[in-house]
Length: 370
Image (cartoon, rainbow, N blue to C red; front, side, top):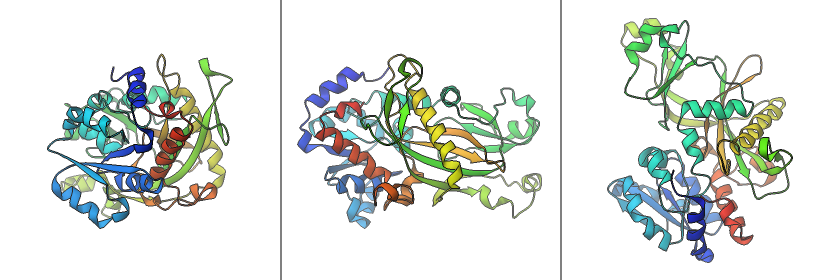
């Protein structure tokens, strides 16, 4: 079940709130997390495997950690829990941490962590994700349960934060069998044509102003906290974005070429303003539903990303959620067209640090830590 909330509260009670250190695995979105922590006046800790990783951060003095923990394997973080706590460390989770450490190990990491670590259990399962998002009112691509029923283009995805690695398109059962790794947990979704937009939200359960999320179910009638849109991106995926220039998928496969969905970069984007109310509606429903996922759920805390496709009918299809900071927020270290409206130079990394700073000052840090 992972670390229980009461234990986390005990750890926090023993922390020196004037000496909090922001700790992060040196990968994924760590540059903006470290930079944002420094902007908010925190001491920082980088966690890495390999000396070359530490040397790289000297190229970015504005984000270079104050201290390093060098490991031979990221799973050694479990053995350093007491050391982390002696340093008043709060860990900021991101996709690389969850992938390197493993979802189960992360839930058992005996160190205070920003956000709700238990919700990543729902993120890591395609089936649980779908239950959550549909309960929140999101429209999702159809799922094909039996690969023999593939009768048109589908995309096959594996579980976990793999940056698109291993995903593939299939047009029929033969395509599917040729490419699938049956040892991995996978989901088969219809391939929806449209523009892919990744919407970066932040939920602050301690704020009582702004766009308030309305509770549902057992929380009906309650304001749960403030929902913010911080930024938005599109992904460069190698090599599927260039495949259309070379011919049909069938022609390419005759040349032993397969499209790849591995993410290599991110591009800033804004969408039509008329689409924003629906975007907020989906995000609000997702947050509200998160408080009803399981008995005693603390819900969504902090940053999350709705990964969507907008069709030519201007309809959103949500195909995934990332329940933590995403690398697509990296183009916005200096702020975005959305976050700048409220406060300039507010990255997602800095917004996390600001939330921790506010929690310390208002003495409700345990409301945002798990």
